[in-house]
Each structure stands twice: as C-alpha cells, then as structure tokens.
Length: 267
Image 1 (spheres, one colour):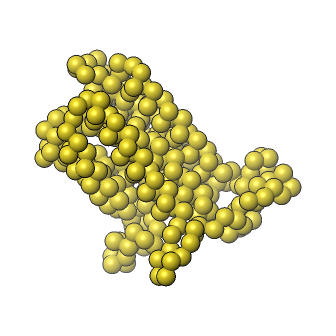
Image 2 (cartoon, rainbow, N blue to C red):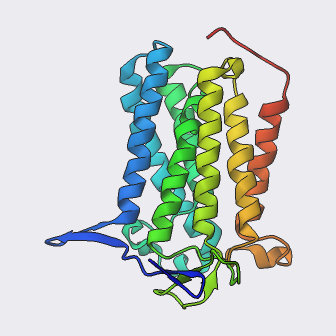
C-alpha cells in the first residue's frame, strides 16, 4: 500500500503463504477469526447466564454450517442464478468464492431455530440476542477479507482517501470495504455495551432487532457507493441494488423487535 497523487494505491496479495498444495489466504483467516471471536464472546455470555457449556459447542456447529450453506446459496440464487442454473455441479464449490451476507443471515437464523428446538429448548430469541453481538464483529472481519481480495469495489471517486485497486483497474474508488468494516465494528461495540451494561438484554429480541437495523441499515447506505454486483435489481428498474432490496425486509423485522411492546424476562 502506498500514497499516489493523494490516493491510496492498494496492491495487497490475497495470499499469506503457501504450504505445499495448501494456500493460506487473508479472507480465510479473517473468516475464521470472526468465528473464533464469536465463540469466545458467546461463551462469556453463557457463563454469565449459567447456561450449559455443552450447548455452546453444538450451537457453534449449527452456526458454522448455517452460515456457510446459507451464504453460498444466497450468492447462487440472489446474485448469479443464470450462471449456476447451467452449472449445478459448481454450487458446492465454496472455495471458488461467492458468499452472500443476506443468505448467511438467513442460514444462521434457520440454524439457530433448529438449535433452539433440538438442543436448548428455549425461545429462539434467547440465543439470537447473544449470537448477533459477535456476528457484527465477524462482519467487520469479512469486509477486511474482501479488501485484501480487492473485491466488492466502490464507485469511482476523487475523494482524497480513494483506493486505487491495482489488481483490478487502477481507478480511484470508494473503499466501501472499509466503510462497511468500520460501521460493523461500531455496531459491535454498541451491541456489546448494551448487552453487558444495560437491562435491554432482558427484553427478548431487542438486541437481535437492533442488530438487524444497524447492520442492514448500513448495508443500504453503503450500497450507494458500490458498483453493481448484479442480481435481480434490473427487475425493479434499477431503483435499488440487489443488496438494498434484500436488506429492507431485515430492517423492517428489526424495527418490529426494537419497538414492540416490552416483554422483559428475568435475567
């Protein structure tokens, strides 16, 4: 990375090192770091509420499977179905890239519904209010991984902090990966503070709802600075991007949980 004519020239390698046939990539490291940080944070929450630690191990498996499968299918169906409909055998090839955060969110919610039904026997909001806190941090890590891959590019701009992605097209662009990463980091700090320092954690669904409003609200905002990633936006007259169209329902659901009648429970 270097400064060039007031801009930041970005030519980072997406690979950290190669060990034989195995290549370690920044994206994979950030992705794993997000899950490990989440495991640590949720473990502290379980301990504070005296929940069985065995639940945590099972929840982790549910979340990983739900996130990966959901994110992959989200990319396939939301953004690139015309291609994958003709190449069905490539759908499971996650290592080739192509994950969608909206699909990952849906996958995690379904996974935690199954976890609540089969393992904890508690209302699903009990686990959702915990998991979403580190999920915001994981979102930050993933966007940093996107930055290292020089992917999810912003629109051309002349702002002084623009990034020139050498591995793409050498055009000064908005560093939307950093915009989103910083937004998600701020969301994590707020949600973490609310859980540990306020009584809102006793209101089922409040933290989950606020997470949806913050994360997908920011997603709607930063999509205005991104290049189109395709999908079904043309079917709606290109008024909103696919990412924005998919984010609106999440924000509305979040607002419902934030403002619904207080249903506090004992901690």
